[in-house]
Image (cartoon, rainbow, N blue to C red; front, side, top):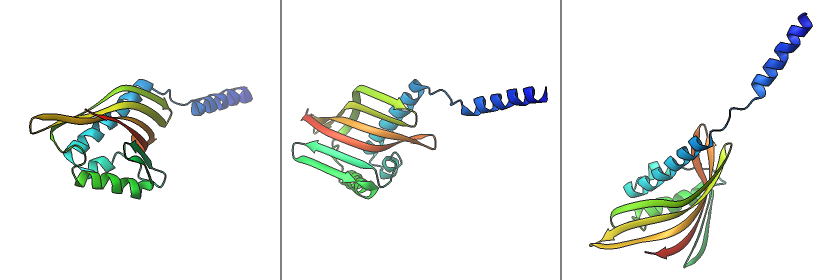
Length: 162
């Protein structure tokens, strides 16, 4: 009898510890969208600390940009943070009044503690009453670290000015 009870307890312990918590994909997608919204808000506020906090900040972080002037690659947090910091310090491309950032045509795939997504990224603002802005397509990889989604890779393909 002791062997039977011991066996049942062992099976229950093994089964209980080996079961992973079910992934709530919709909840994770909402959390990822919050990161993207915070990214846009941090850029509008020109707040490097807020923007930097959204990134993994390791040697593997990468940013690729393809636009009308060619292709640029930034590898490692030193290069990526330098690019983002310089961009914020110089007012970036969003130097007009009332900037608005929208993300459309979103495709998100969540697989455990990693996710990838692609979307149309649109920025609109006014300069002296004239509407201006730009569009790009972004591909982003994120990692979930200590319960928070962080950006680890960004590829940007410039589409057009508005």
